[in-house]
Image (cartoon, rainbow, N blue to C red; front, side):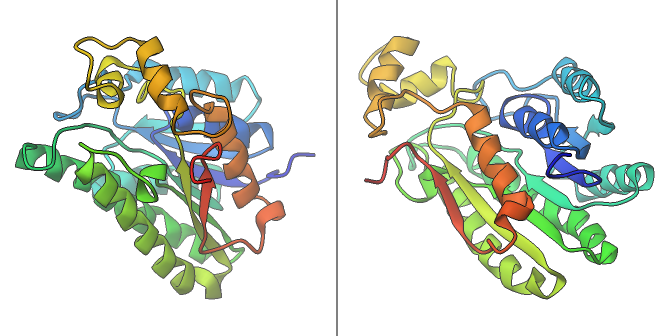
Length: 275
């Protein structure tokens, strides 16, 4: 018996990284999955983003767990595409119980030097896209009448931050306000809403040269080892970055009966970074 037997979860950014990890973790606990990902390159993002092959691998790994998955490409900036994906998934799988607004991007530039396109794309994806995800999906949970859970991926950057990510930080702060309003609005439907705030996570969004440069601007061509020196200063525990599975474990707690009375909180996974 799994903790999520019979339930269905909708996950954005599911092609790789935290999204894939969440899909596999929930599937191991008995959930069926509706998964979407952009599977293309966003214009302001300096690292390679997920591909259709990555999403196909998520499908393969979920199906290997003997769970059903309905997956497709969708841009979370496109409300109509999100609604089509969720509606199709619910029609195939019969219900919706969990929404993980996980998709997001990272880019970096000094605040007064970044151009409008970089700022706008960050807000459109990392803030407005999360609202569109919830708007497209949560009505299915309400209609089901069984209650459910929404988890929005924010960041430690909404609590303690660094230079050169004002747009990212603003978006992640905005998600806290969105979560707190939704937690009140959806409570009468027994739908819980929380945000996650990870420190650096060992995924392709972090493990790339532009991010190494963000952490080590003093070096011309910083390596992973250079990044590791700086990243360790964020954490009191002796690690460089947490694993995606660590974040998925927190997700499982928040969406399962173990967290049935947890709503309206900022759930931090920071390896002691705030201590």
